[in-house]
Length: 459
Image (cartoon, rainbow, N blue to C red; front, top):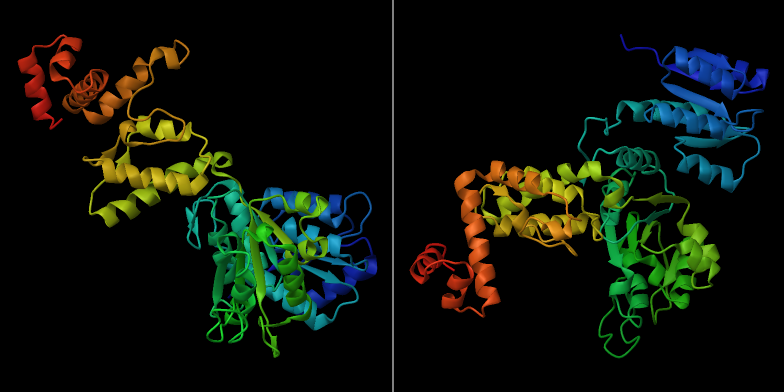
């Protein structure tokens, strides 16, 4: 026999608490009631609930404040907020802070029962548990990423437009794809376009298509992004690069759900969900007059910020493991791990290029490495010296012998000594313009010994 779901009803109006309690009991749910947010938090300390239904406007602790407290304790509990004073600001804030849904009074009984059923089912389907390393192709189990996974699952089935903020290389398109995968139109097209990659004179044609003969070179009709994405999702990356003219045309598509091709006369109706992304602060762009305010609010119904990699360093080992497997398979190698000191170098690095840069570093490391372990000298980090342990004058006079020992233990004695010899020979040749005689003198070796070592190491 299936467990009975237990629902907590929070409302300062006794009549609403009683109505919901009776309604839920008739439909097979167990209920508890609280007259305010503080009472609800006290009940949450005592027992487990599968769902919370709360009014927004309550004295002392509002429904939004209750929501924030609940999500700090348990991201998986769905919270449905209800209010008689609907406002777009409250709705956006509720969804951003983790509400499953937002319902206005008066509501139909069938509507709220439908939301309750969907919310309880969504909890059963929650994928990103704390022990999970990935979600919909996104790697990471840091608290920051778990919150994003939770938000994707809640907003995916809605038709709300999404604006994704994030620095270059953070994985904005992966998040957009995950949203589409969790939508009701996942079986339909996901069409991406990078706005900055298309010349200004062609962007309108790429978005809306053009009719044959519309301009020089238009030798046939062209289907644009919005028509291709009809009944699916359109992903507009670098949305902040659109010109004022295209911003105006895009706004019309969002408002009217229709457009005309460049040079065309036929009005084309579309039903497209817009997922956009930017590495700019669009609110600042709006204030500076470079981006339309009305378009911004249409695009950013639900904003998502992807943290840079430096803010979720705990995900670096997981990402490294993922990229190691990917590129070892691709290059036909068996590079299985990163040495402990090489991992420390990565963990101490800020990754200005984010996940994309880390992938590039691991790809290059796998390509360069001849053993089954990536060493520090196979790492190429921007602004960092690569391939050698820092000298004392670069570390503020600190003794770095411990780092050298770590490398030695990773490699084994013979490999460690061999690598030191190779680096010294290359450095000596570099300092002497590739003169073997002078390089041997610099290293205080006989020319014969130097020649033997150089030949042995194929230098």
